[in-house]
Length: 457
Image (cartoon, rainbow, N blue to C red):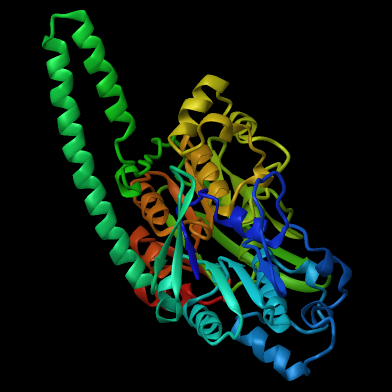
């Protein structure tokens, strides 16, 4: 089964409830057989904390030969040694390890929350083909369900407006067709009822007798309550980035940057300048040094050698797929006010545009889904006038509609941009003028041939 719905609609929460890892809900869950859940983010995994090497974590019962484990890891595009400490891996690598562990366990019910987030097309196809042949039951949340289209038996669609789950029998293609037909019927019904209400309100305005007006008023109010909810695509978020404040011709310059970890050289003698207005795509496989370079540019990490020179007027907006700039104990409202220096009244109004309304602003960052954290990050960026945006995989947790909305906003941005993305279409439409490529560790003028390397993971 595919589980679908916009970011923040409750998909991840539902899987956690089924798995028994969520509290504060009413109702019952009846389970038969074994269950395994792989979340979209590995925040804290006690089993991984206990394991000293990858092999002990992936196959704790020693049921498989090394070659079989390596074959699985290769399929998941995870290039790590079996004796490597899993706790030192990146967030994306930990998620792949957790997926491998779950697949080796072969549970009766496998719950997967965005299992292909950190993979290129080949890796996504491998995972979806594996799941299509899986003997047990699978409930999967994914923005790539079309890859698994023919293998799906049904789709469960969560409506964020009335908190219900609608069941559609058939493939993902069947679901999109049936959902589209239903939305068209809903829109027609909404137009007809809205027109009827408008005429009733015109009659109300022209009536003279108070009792008759009171009767009609009550009738209008009852009819208004029966209006169908507008389909989601009629409620798109509109994002426009502010005009960045002025900065010098050279906002940032890296001179002879080198960095090693435990004797392993990650960056060596990197030297480049960022010119005002540049759009730079950082391209390279995971683990090649992209995140290390970004953190050094931001000043979050000190280089072993060299220096980063920043213009006095430089103002940087940073988005990270691992959200390490957020305090997970603080609320949405506290976080927004802290990063933007805006008052609470302004913050609540602004956050409402990003679907954080009512009590949602009092949720802690740690309780948000990956897509909601992304939405908050973008809200923070759009409330500031940064003249340099550094974006590390900004589309990882977003549904297709949200990806398009953010892409259109970034295409209009007038400042300087450095972006890491493994989504070819995203990079292509941003039209970078330069690329910093790994493992070569050098800046080059943009050439369409580099698009072939964008999906490498």
